[in-house]
Image (cartoon, rainbow, N blue to C red; front, top):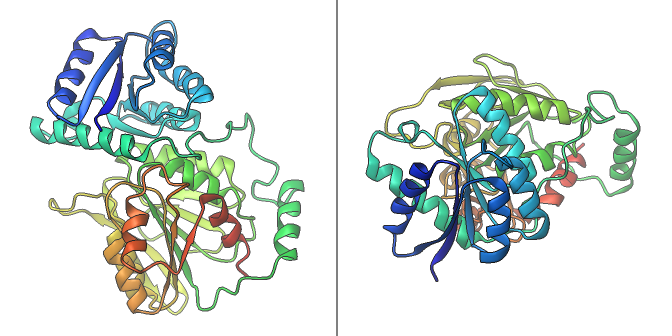
Length: 362
């Protein structure tokens, strides 16, 4: 079945460009266009597309408001076009919070200097979103206007959560020394759901590997830090791994682990030209397997492709554990599917269960 797409942008030139690129794929059909957010809402209701491509800044109604209104009545995957700036990152994260599924740079030179590669990437993103459909967890919960009570100190929310966790049978961490979470498409919302369930007293360090441009990760880390009881920051070379601290791999670089004997730190390094993912889940898993053999809990969440599968294989061979997200709660069941189908998942969990199970670690 062909993926039916609605293209939304206030520039007629850009809409035609997107239409032309998508229409070259026989598995994609552009069924309509809209020049502003209000028109996009109306067209989405009338045409019921499988995927919507959406600009952020538009007249009448902006793209974020349009996404929020569209996904309120119907769960449809929305691919946002974003500028790779700090402000663009914050706006894109707002769009993901509103219910968008993924984003792609609007300036195509930021994707590749090769027009054919740009076209293939756009086509593959659209088809993957159409194949994944609108998963139940697509829209994020409304973003609080102020930091939650549980931030840093165990206030009312954190105390209630910890009491509930204490009432359940404890999950023994065994030899866990480090948790590494890898994700891609749908990851920003998924990570928010997982990490906001963890108390400030969480006993292990966490590494976060999210496929994301370099200009986005600092803004994303700041947002997570505002929302979570644990501390979240963008990783810098030499940062120590500490309990209750999550370090987000910087976009455009690779993340490794150094040290031994409980004194671990992160190592950030430049990616090779032949490495497609920057940061790469496979590389982070491999580094963790080398630094903490048998002592890592790796978690693979929603995402396109299979990044993380080979690294998970190395972790398993060293005696570490691997969890993966289930299909029903994944925006794109690619990365977790690769791990599960390879027989590497010790547990397959719905997204809502991942944070709850982590919070039970003692």
